[in-house]
Length: 380
Ligand SMILES: NC(=O)c1ccc[n+]([C@@H]2O[C@H](COP(=O)([O-])OP(=O)(O)OC[C@H]3O[C@@H](n4cnc5c(N)ncnc54)[C@H](O)[C@@H]3O)[C@@H](O)[C@H]2O)c1
Image (cartoon, rainbow, N blue to C red):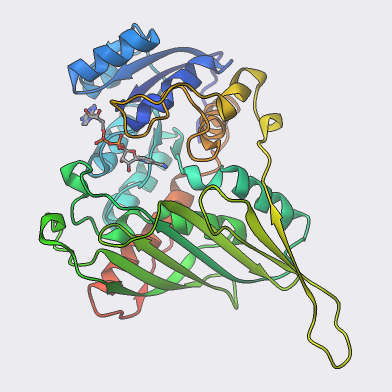
């Protein structure tokens, strides 16, 4: 945790495809002085900078790390660069936000946890799935005791990655499972301690990549540290006819919530009172989670719902629009920025991020060993 005080933060956003959605939000944040953009693709850098008016431009992260003009870096680069770049940012004495996943090996997770401690800088994993409107609503319902005792959790992330950049081809599905795992661990306030996972399906030859992973689908059951609680998680990446969705389902002894379709309301089940000689009644209701501008500074509230014409050059279609990933982007930016200004840990610090990410890494190890039990290390 940082002990340095700041009036206003100087930020660099690195990687401008998905990262393009974040630079304008930092720019609008009242605690940010200025924002630089960085992308190794100079054409993309200049196209983006010209279109959205960013003058500070870099093609090499090293130049930002050498400069004393920046306090914090937000990495939105390809997956296998995250660990190395995060370590470089922290070792350079700058705060680091990183898109998911934190890393793809347990050793890299350990190194980042250590670097966060030693550098006394903040690390935050920018997990969109725990700042969506539905998750913010579920969190509030849980705090109000509406689910009662949580009995079981289930999550899934379905996404077909055909024709995405090469590094996605053959990626172990559980190496990118934080969107499905994190909401479950976050709502229960615990970590996963043990996993059994199975690979499933047959991968088309054109999707077999460099990772030695034969599975387009992986499905896991986790034992959680909280007694009497398990969670089930499924990830699909290829050859599976299911529309995109990152969902969480919470089953309590008073009520349960299921998120079944990406853009549909959630389904809420409420258990009625016990009745002699009869099954308990179960009320079923559709609920729509509201946006939460009240959790943001006024300058960021528009990024929850603001939309512009989709950019045909950007598959994320979320440049300048904050409502990608169900309104989560401005909340993530605000939490990262305020954690630094308030000199406190961010909500998803290195230990939390490592616990969430390790669950998926260990799940893939289990799948590669026929579903054998794998103990998930703790990063406390
Ligand atoms: N919901 C979410 O949290 C979410 C959604 C989408 C993507 N992501 C993550 O965001 C990351 C980026 O996703 P994407 O789809 O934009 O990837 P991408 O590969 O399409 O784009 C990456 C960008 O980073 C640039 N880049 C590559 N190496 C660089 C370097 N060394 N220095 C500076 N720039 C570099 C590339 O030129 C490109 O513009 C991925 O790690 C992905 O896991 C997270």
